[in-house]
Picture 1 (cartoon, protein in one colour):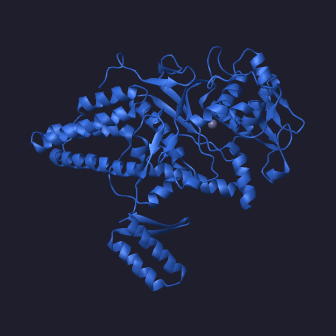
Picture 2 (tube, protein in one colour):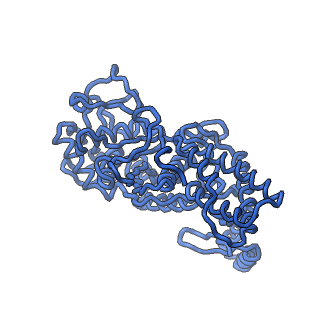
Picture 3 (tube, rainbow, N blue to C red):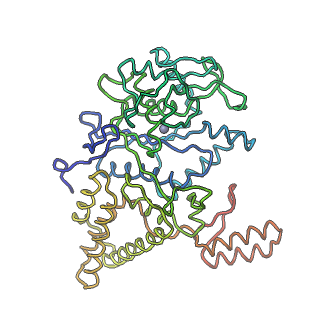
Length: 477
Ligand SMILES: [Zn+2]
């Protein structure tokens, strides 16, 4: 379908700040380890987070499209500073909070048609490899126990060994005060200092602590990604990605911890390619609750948009471009998908069940765009130009059954990457959701007659109610 020797996938590697050809670590293999920093399950993920997770899904899907065997790992951060704060604020046990938001995350992942990662390890279930990694760093002289019972990574010792700290963000060390320590999981670049690997138990932690050789406490955020990625993908693997806000300190610390442990074959890095997705603006501004432009996926579904429309919009721009997300843009996504669906509907009619191999033209153009550092906007451009051409030929009655069948097969191939799926409405429109709300209110008021009438009304509109432990949900009949 395309010539492997004359074309190849190229990616912008944050480590080298250049676009490089993608070559797996193994000399001959097509196997690729892909690690994406996952959610901290203390709240619903917002659409800025979803842009990054969809970027991860695009990388995974495109590598598979290009014939690589991907092993996709995404961690679940189920203990960190934010979660401890949430436990303190709500009084709920840690596991209760994390279970709730973890379930919501996987539900949202499905709504957006992301391929589920092969492994989704939880930090609290990997204390053994985390502790082992810290012990190794202590044995190699890169970590030390502080008087507060915490264990810190010594940037001074690491640098003195000839290694570089600050490869991703080009740190300046003029202002660095040796031995200065930061305990918090997230900190500013100016605060560069020894970071916590293990945090000794303090009163605010309540009952969130585990035993360790250094006393009771909990792991820092950065060490979990080093320990779990190396445990599941090996000491050197191909791709590590996340949002650009994770470059520092999170990813920088991951490199220091993983390479400081020295498990790699000499000359091999911890990660060969680092990919970072750009920020998301909403209605031209940084998303914030006080500006009223803060959306979770659920907020947008409640406005009547579908996961498919949201996926299309979030995957319409190049991952390294700041993207301005707007509700108008979502309307545009709806219109674009309608145009695509109408064309596919006509092709199905014309093909009449005939199955043939994919037409090469659109697949080649799409591949050329995506090979160029995942230029998905170029890929969509190729798709919609092609749709216009097809429509013209359909209108002229110039497209026969075999061409229609080949066009459909080409779309199916492209859709393994784009993940638009079939346009069966699975999310209820607003008026249907309003009926569900009214029915729930009637049940609460013990007005069962009205609740029943509303259930029948929903049925008449093609929806059935399923009562689940997490509340009532609508399903298409
Ligand atoms: Zn991470």
